[in-house]
Length: 235
Image (cartoon, rainbow, N blue to C red; front, top):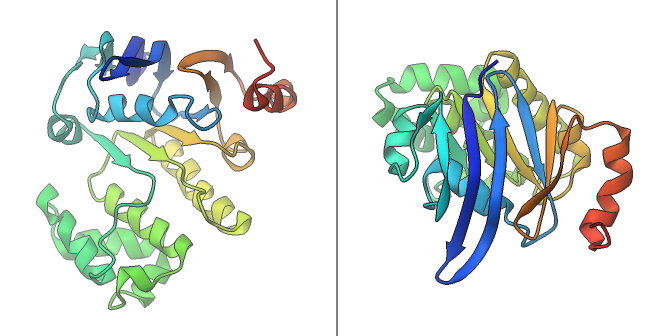
């Protein structure tokens, strides 16, 4: 299948410091791609370029085969790209319902948004009047996902979904992500801790110092090599 999202020879910089050196990455519809690597490797910058939040200094971003390099994040969102950033991006002082209400800008009515959210995450329905900041970390991440799904995304970009969460909760969240992929969503997941996401990933890429050092099917050989990439002993 042709990729729905593609980064081709992408370089990126902050001021005069280059942080990405020719990233090549593809995600097809219905595929989960895990983007792995140590802190500071360039994973989040790669995700931000895919969402239009950071402009590449070289190379191109393609969506459905069309060059959208430099497109505004709003335009990419309208085209079906949804970024759920590290830190979840919810409004902690608003209730669960009011957090969902913020997504009515997509053109969907609140009852429809709530129906989708509560069907997928029943606990949110039980807590719909509760301030989002008082939810558990896992419930806050569920709310972030529910808000993202209100946009009916074709491409879902996730940054550190597992951060600060118990392994059991992480496993549950990734089951939801896998279900979204089965429905045809192209999913690109940035993770520092690989174990949970590799259980559902169809493809993985390891980024070290701004370059893809390895990519392919996440089989047992990747697990054996990850420690050397993270510790910096791999070439």
